[in-house]
Amino acid sequence: MKMIWAWVAALGLAQPASDAATLPLAAGSMAQRVDAFVRGEMLREQVPGLALGIFRHGRVLLAKGYGYANLEHRVPVSAATMFQTASVGKQFTAVAVMLQVEAGKLALDVPITRYLPDAPLSWRAITVRQLLTHTSGLADYLYGFGKDGTEPFDVRHDYTEDELLRGFYRLPLEFEPGSQWYYCNTGYALLGILVHRVSGKFYGDVLREQVFKPLGMKTARVISEADIVPNRAAGYQLVEGAIKNQEWYAPAVNTSADGALYLSLNDYAAWDRGLRSMAILTPRSWAEVYRPVRLSSGKEYPCGFGWFVDESRGQPWYHHSGGSQGFTTFISRYRADDLTLVVLTNLIDASPARFVDGIAAIIDPRLAQLSPSTPIPDGDPATAGRVARLLSAIAADEFPVSELVRARRSLVDQIRGYTPVLRRLGKLGRLELVDRRDLGNEKSSTYAAHYAAGTLLVQIITASDARVSYLEMQVD
Image (cartoon, rainbow, N blue to C red; front, side):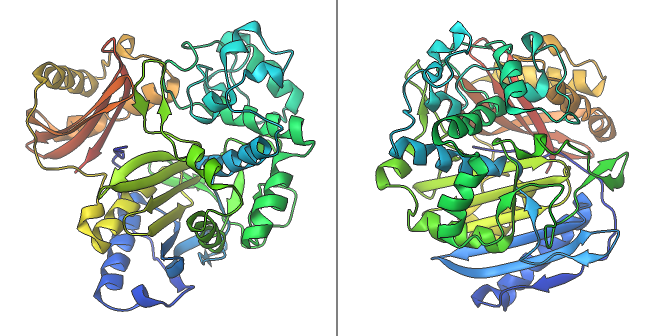
């Protein structure tokens, strides 16, 4: 899946570095190029602290910390620094679910009302598999909670599990289950509740006992504000160009199964070894985890259980990102090269995907995925014309929200945030198509938009009715 990152300004920060591993990559020109790239990108994106893991053939080639885990105390990042996973935690929830499937306590393709008998009648068409693959049709609770999705979700309220369920029950179905793909945190929060219901244990306890401990993930854990967590990083956000402390979430909100874990680079190294050896689950279960979902139309969407499933050099490429509460994360596994890259940052505005792609290109240019630049023939000039019109509208701060499939506030705010960037670039010169692919029932097109003052990469994803489901830009 192509991913495009947003533009951010640069700020000069002194960046200490700490080596936690000195294996083959830790010396020589390649290591120096990686180091220079990471430092330069941190400066450009204003990232306070970053942890980089490069794992190959089950070995740690590099585990290195850059910058600060805590700006106030000037604590440097190390391989032991604990970062929030955000949505990368979904792949662990998926394993907790599959453990219940293997134990005969859950079934992938039966209605979830078997396990939630008090759920709305409309949920009879929703299966566990659809929760895992973001195809349930449920609205995302983070963008509207209860009362048909019109009540804001209060991140400062300590919702009980029952309160969350009651709120979820009032959420609308945005599409027929199985017919479309749309990223949905509600599904994974529900999966954590299901694991609790059928196992009798909190999903975090299932992970601790059946995943973290067996794999040697010695410091991995569910987030806790009350506990003393050694090497805990502080999270940050940009507010009008200045670094501020992360937004505060209520403790119970910070334990949901849609991405509320702490992991260090050391934990990710152990996780990578477990993934390589197909530990914990049976081969049949791992095949389910990595299988792209098939929509009711018969088309595939490149999403498995907690992983996006793409291709690199003719072999599977598994990856996922996360961002929440002052942290961003990216894990990328290139099976053709038996290579895993992990980037952890403590800035919500950072783009770890950009770091991963740049580092992958240094190791092997054939692995670069996120920055297409070579023009390809465009058999759909109408879409190019529409993108040009939308760019003009965004520059004038007149983006037509009615063109969106779902006018989620986060996407609308993101699009409107490009207005100052487009105004600085001036008048659009030409558009060149550099990537196009089908994503289930949707179409993704990426263009190089050339201006006198620079070039933008613009990704637009359109639904079958031509409305826009996603729009993102990056200064090339």
